[in-house]
Image 1: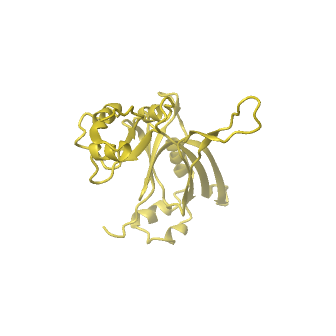
Image 2: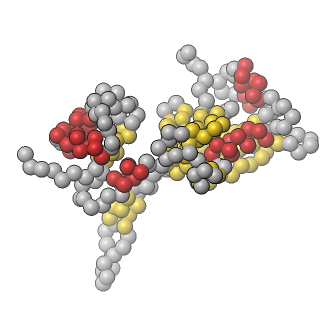
Image 3: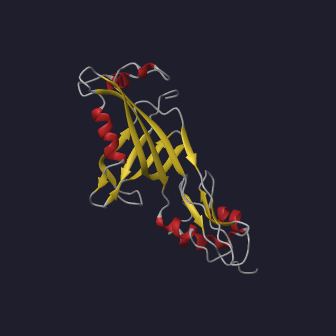
Length: 240
């Protein structure tokens, strides 16, 4: 319903195609973050020719974006009343059940940090909240415990986490293709988009849509999913 509080969610997957979820690999934050930060970087080739004093920087590549998030863990029962009105479920979650925030932090670490023994690497993650949709992996995290019970049990903590955006293999190969002077483009499907229309926007001609469909392994080009990422590789244009 309108005004219902939506919580930031993280889901863990064992494969880079994001098809197989990890068992018990879901985390929902109790308190939504106050902000999140995207960091973008453009790498330049700084090499210069022998015998020259300087050279104009040349574009090398644009690596995947970084995401920074701060997570609040709290079992004091007082922070839940800030911001949006608390639901009954939130009131229950905010209460201390004798172990403080230990269980909350353990579940968070299990999803975003723990090593996946089957795949020999940390989990692939999908982070969603409102307009935020991010695919990536954890690169760095620190957890600060800030409030304790008299016996030392922590009741409040802040986790600062950094994630590296992940691009599926077919997108990565296209983005790293430097054999053509034409830049590779990645576009997200919006409502009403068709593959011929998107192809026309990139190449100025819709006739290349079958090549784009093949490059993206799209078997039904008439049915695109909103939010789907499609890459448009360098194509040697044929004169009309």
